[in-house]
Image (cartoon, one colour):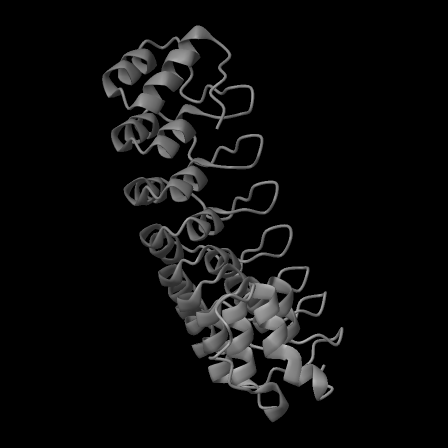
Length: 298
C-alpha cells in the first residue's frame, strides 16, 4: 500500500491512521482543514489505511466523521478488502455495520472474500459469508476462493467454503482444479478434504497432467498415498506419460518406489530394499526400474 500524500495535512491524517494515533486523527479531522476522504495519488483513503493497519478506534472515528465506506482506490480495493486481507475481523464487522459491500472487485477480480481465503483468515471468511459474500467469486484467471485456499493449504477455510456451496471441481481458466493445485503444493490435509467432498482425482489441466502426476513429480508421498486410496490406477496421461514417469523425472527415489509398489501391473513391482547403499540416487532409480524396462513397460 502506498502512503504518498498530496498535502501536509493529508500526510498527517494518513500517518495517524497508520499508527493508530486516535487523538491526532481527531484533532486533524475536527480542525475542518482536511477532508475525511482525502486521498493519495493512488486513491488510497485514510479509512483504507486504518482498516489495513488494524486500528479499530481510528476506523470508527473516520466512519463517524463521514468517511465513505465503499470508496475504491486505483486498483479497485476497498477498506473492506484491506481489512479482510489482513485478517482484522472486528473491523470487517464494523464496516458491515455501516454499509460495506462485498461486491466490489479489484482490477484482477479480487474481492474481500478471495483475499481472506488466500491468507487463511477463517474468522473473516465466516463473517464475509454471513454478510453475503459470493463463494463463487473468480479472479480474472478464473481462480475461485476455494482454489486460492487450496493453493495455500488453508484446510479450515477449504472446509468453510465447501460447506457454503463452493464447487469442488471448479477449475481455473488453464484447467487447473483445486485438487491439482493442492497436490502440487503438497497440502495433504487439503487433498483429503477435497477428495472426501468429491474432487475428481483424474481431472487434468490443459497440458494433460493430473494431480497424481504433479504430486509424483514433486515427491509428495503422503499426497500420493491419499490419491491412490480413491483410485489405485496409475493410468496414462494424454501425452502417454504416467505418474511413474513424473516421479523419475523428479528424481525422487522414495516416490518411485511408492508408485512401483502401488501399481496394479505386476511387472512394475519388485523388492528393492537390498540395493547397495553407495549407489547414487539416479543409479538406484535405474536399478529399480530395470525390471520394468526389460519387460517392455512404458
